[in-house]
Structures are given as structure tokens and as C-alpha cells.
Image 1 (spheres, rainbow, N blue to C red):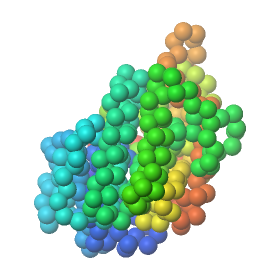
Image 2: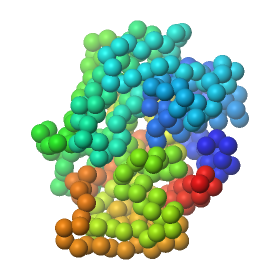
Image 3: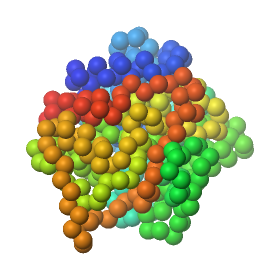
Length: 350
């Protein structure tokens, strides 16, 4: 991705959203989930700072596959600022990272909604055991801070039509077949606070909404990802519902810059919604934006019995971004701009 000129332009724009970005310079940062949709652009931003701002940041990519990590970022060489360490978020084995650690970004998690119900054990283990490993690493290494990537799904169901603020918790059926994901994310947030109380570990939490962008993976079955694949293949986007549910959409590079802004400026043991106030819209709205950018149409197929399983039952999961913006962060990509850039970049990559 770092060889894509359009993506590089977006990285350069996104980095300007991070207040006092030089506070990251010279730091050693461990990133889990580094090849995933959300954290791979975080690594890209850090690499950009090294290449174009002489930031001298050391990025330790923690993951299951060095081959997969090298396929995404290139060879791990000390002079490039990239290091690799083996890490399995579902294991109880302690992670071994030699040398000092300044920051930890924990983004390793099952992010495929269809797997929440099919693999609930692995989903929960990754969100609790994997986080425990990193909190222990933060404790032992005396890291400055750990950032935990949680989810907007922790809010549960709420009848309000207003965007969720960080304290607006709704109902969550803990016995639902896919409840393991939001329940373990909630538990993970509590675990971060508990490590602060008992062991003095400084942590912050981010709750991304619905993220879209060119780093999405082929296995991603969320609505916006499916719409994008369909439209780029030259086919009309088909909605099997009215698409009236409200969501907080956010371009992935706005999300990445927000993660780094909270890492540096967030208050300890606090959570921050990641949302773009200029991209709160319905599912049908983003479907139309994607279709328009790709030059196809949107069709509705509301025949009874044909509707797919609705993974997220919330009619409104929009998020209030005021707390995040109070840190000095501002999004750079509204819905129209973000969708257009995503389609342009994916076309050049294809």
C-alpha cells in the first residue's frame, strides 16, 4: 500500500490530524492486529513519519505470521524501523519483546461479524486473553501507555435516535449467540481500568464505529465491504432491506489518525468514540455513495424470505465524536471524499 501514490497522499493528509505528532517521534511502539484493516494504516502512518519526517519510530509488529506481515509491510530490517515478534491473541503464553517499550496498541481481534457466532470461543479468548498478555507486557516493561481498540458494539441496544456518547450504555443480551464479541469487548475495557487500579498500568480505550477504506480484506463481510466489492466488479449494489439503520461511518485513515491522537493525548482509563460527524448516515446512504463512485446503481430486493441475517440489530449505532475532537483531532475525509478515495485506490490496486 505504501507504494500506491493515492494512498500516500491520504496518509500525508491524515497525519496532519494528529495534534503534537512529534510526541510520537523516537518512541518504540508495539502493535497487535497490525495487518488488519484498522491497525495496518496505523503502522503505515508511523512508517510515513519515519520516511518523510525523520521520526525515528521503532514499530514492533506482533502477530502470528511473519510472512503475512512482510507481505503487507515489506522486509523487517532495523534501519527501516520495523521489527517483528511472534504473538497469538488466543494463547496464554507471555509475549517476549526484548528491549524497552514506550507504547502498546492492541488491535488484535476477530473483526468478521459472521465469525462472532460461528467461533464465539476464539472471539472471546482473543478479546480477553490477548489483551491480558499485552497488559502484562505493559506492566513488566513499564510502558508509558497501552491503547485498547474496543468497539461501538459495546453500547448494545438503545431506543434513542441521538448519537451515543461514551456513557450511553444500552441493553445487551449476554446469552445471544453472537454476544461473545461485545461482551468480551466490554470485559476488556473493564480489565484495562482494573490494571490501572491494581498495577498502575496507564491505558486508554477507543471505540471505532463502522470503518471503511482501501485496507479492507476480502474476508470482510460487513455491509460496506460487500457493497464495495460488488460495485468494483461492475455489478449493481443490492439492498435486501430498506437500509434505514443509522451508522457512524469513518474513513480508515481518519480512524488511524484518531487512534494515534488518543494514544498521545487521551486521559488515562477513558474511552473515546471514533466517528466522523460528517459521515453519520444510513446504510442506504453509503450504498448510494459507493455505487455512485463506482458508476453502478443501487437496487432494492425486499422479497420476503430472501433477507440475509442482520448481524447488527441496532437501528441506531451512530456515535458522538465530541470527546475525541476535544483532544484537537479533526477528520479529513467526509463520506463523499472517503468513499471516492477508497474506490480510486482499490481500482489502482486491482
